[in-house]
Image (cartoon, rainbow, N blue to C red; front, side, top):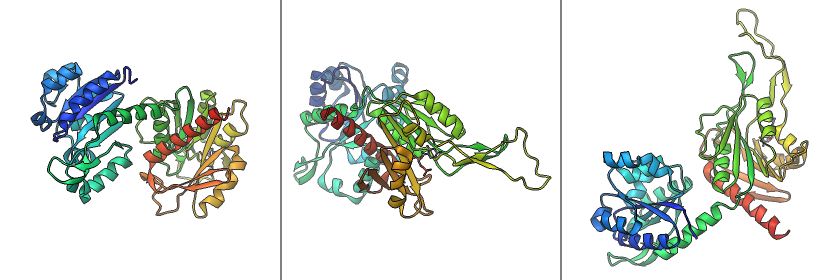
Amino acid sequence: MLHGKKILLIVSGGIAAYKSLDLIRRLREHGAVISCVLTEAACKFITPLSITSLSGQKAYSDLFSLTDENEMGHIELSRQSDLILVAPATANILAKMASGICDDLATTVLMATNKPVMVAPSMNVRMWKHMAMISNTKKLRDRGIVFVGPETGDMACGEYGPGRMTEPLELVGAIYKHFDSNNPLEGKKALVTSGPTHEPIDPVRYISNRSSGKQGHAIAAALNQFGAETVLVTGPTNEPDPPGVKVKRVESAREMLDACRESLPVDIAVCAAAVTDWCPSEPCEQKIKKNGKAPAVQLTKNPDILRELAKDCNNRPHLVIGFAAETGDVVKKAIPKLEDKGCDWILANDVSRGTKTFGGDQNTIYFINGDLVEAWPEMTKINVGNLLAERIAKQFKEELKNG
Ligand code: C5P
């Protein structure tokens, strides 16, 4: 059952809008609670009244309605749902989503949301195959948006090909799959480290590195979406807190280690932080004056958080995963780390100049698990997070099956 699941259905203006009425009926039969937003064009195909009658809830369509904003602000509308489903999703709304345009309630809700978004495209076959559509689809998939359909068949315009909106019953199936597969880590606890660390030289200066925290934050977001109770221990970054994740902010490697220890026990630990390898042995309490000769800063090795979690800890998480950021011969350099650090899996990536991994949105990973080395194609850091969460869920499922 989809009992109590809150689904926000966004209906855009395509001929398949009539199917969304049946979809509402089917979803409610399965126990889901449906709120609806219609675009202006959708209102030409179906009426808010028919939507309200079927959903049992007010249908929203006007961004500038003060009554609606009072009843339910657009941010609230986007955040109170477990899933946002755009069905039908026209070429127009998909293009707006891809470009971040928000000129009505539907697109504003889609921009403001931090919840999973699923789309059921519906359009003419030539529109679906258009270069602009192909690039928009890629952009949206890269951001983790789930596409269901379109299906191939006869179109309302008389043509034949892919472009038909998936039938309501099949969409209900996809939604079931989404909720089933989205909580496979329910009951598990996860710890993720992210970002760089800052190692103070004096109160204003520090040693650090170029890590943006994007990858670690994306992993924490994905684990949380998969149902794990997730703690993110992060060094200083500009990344927003992933929704639903408990975030502990730290500065130095020492503080990161303490925050990790305090977060134990957990089932899963993913160390994605680029912990600064050394710290000044004796940071000055006062700002070092620059009128004398340049100071010699004596460095000490920082604690290895991954190694401590995987090897030297009474509460070893069941699955410990590390990263290996290398330049050249990535796999060869990463494999010995499995043993050295004592972790179960390593995700190795190339951070040579020009690979744009540090600070970029894309990542190219070698997934190393014992003798298995898998080259993952280049993908967004969000999708690396999703794929890793999938792998983790699969691992726990298999262990459960094998007793
Ligand atoms: O030794 P190296 O820095 O290559 O190891 C990378 C892996 O070890 C990453 O998973 C990183 O988060 C972790 N690490 C750590 N503490 C350190 C150094 C690295 O947790 N002091």
